[in-house]
Image (cartoon, rainbow, N blue to C red; front, side, top):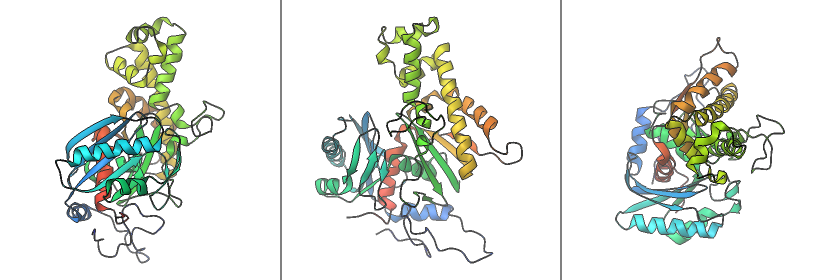
Length: 363
């Protein structure tokens, strides 16, 4: 079993129980440093499988206690049917587990989880409602399973092994189909009172704007995600704009085939229109980060997800927009903005590691 450090009350995901006892008045607030990281590393040395359920693909990997991926496999996401997704997960675990002794399985999925971490309450992109995913998978896999939000898993991985090492207040943003978000504060993932903290992609930044899958209009992810990038590029291409000829050529004139990934690839190759589209998405990203800085005051924003393959073409416009819109600019320290270090594998690395170290793990 994972033994908690002295004086601590819960594992890295438990809410609403506090992570540690409140320190006495006037006592310096304790921080989780390298000693705590070493404790986590030694807590369970066994291998774990991490699963990252995305809107288009399901990734899986065998991960050791140092965050290294020993083997990896992927499948296309089989639509929104939970039973079909469960079958794909079972296939992946059986395939990867054949050559390794696996201690546990961690599942990262987009959406709201209940506080107990067993049910996906609501997943906009997968169209799941009240899905008892953990119980179903534990029955099928006959192994301990931990279920968590995919952005929480990615943030944990970046804090443990990546760009967020050494940070005591970290906000992680993942840019893909939508926008995921998570916070790691003083060595634990902050899930909020009801378990739904970190859904930053659904802050409304344009009232009456584009309709979001969540049901609202004007959500941040409708302006600063891979889907948003693809949508704006398709609009430009359908107008047969002279500046969109590279976009049209890349898809043989089939505008419906334009995706954020294609736009990013063209931008990296030097296409001016694609670079301009990425710059606009970066500006929306920076605006949303400024809002989050006003509310959360982190030391560092780590930006991950598939869209981050654009690198500075995305992040530099975001930094400029962040600086322009930051409340109290010029009179306060500003959070850093860094690209994630672990790339698209952060979610499965974090899910695997959380399944190994979390005291909430059910067997």
